[in-house]
Length: 178
Image 1: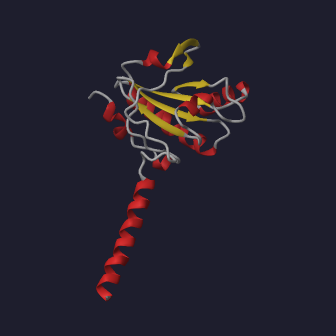
Image 2 (image 1 turned 135 degrees about the vertical axis):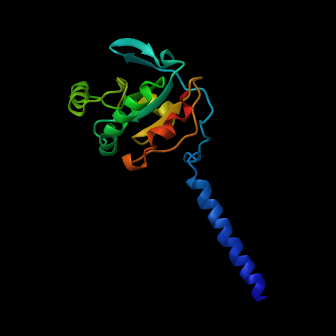
Image 3 (image 1 turned 90 degrees about the vertical axis):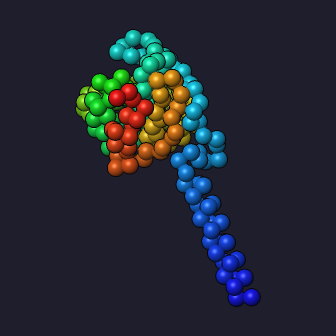
């Protein structure tokens, strides 16, 4: 009977480990199916002051980052995104930030103060610090980053919550031509 009890105990420990591993997987999104491999949803934006769409960045790898000026981790991650933009620019990649900010003046001031070097767009439909554009991607917390390949498909998802957890440029550039 002692051996059966040990086997049962290890089976419970193993099952608990599998459950923890499942919920810790980057593709698990609070019970939602992963969006990896799906076509990126298009949305209107401004690029260099001109009206455009996400699809205008076709044939480029897009690092799509949902952020806000009022979000401390977003502020901390800005220098990393500036660095990433410089790294992937020559490889036909672009960082696109979509800000969930209601106040255009605070947004513009943040861009100046932080020296933002990547394309960024303030979602004008943001209400109560929630961007409808971000919501279409399943984003409920900021910052959140997606990689969109040259074919417009979302690469496997990894949640980036702190700059120290941000993927190094060489990891993000795996979608880029060498």
